[in-house]
Amino acid sequence: MQVQLLSPAQGDKMRPVCVACEVEMKCTLTGALIRINPHYFYAGDQYECPVCENVVITGLGNGFHVDDPETVVFEVDFHEKEK
Image (cartoon, rainbow, N blue to C red; front, side, top):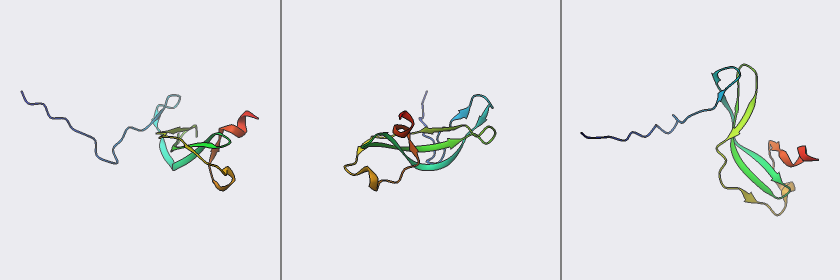
């Protein structure tokens, strides 16, 4: 028996599903920057439920340090929510 491993096409990756609405979420922003602390950021993809508008960010890569965070434009700031 021969087994062939198939990899998904580049644009055919798994997307989040809204548990409450049972629908696939849509990507609304690629490269959303998330501030973890005053000088440390992550980038990921933001998905939104088309029904209830719940938002998640997935696909976080390696974080990065910024000496002057005021020069970074970002969409989500978890550090601000902690204040």
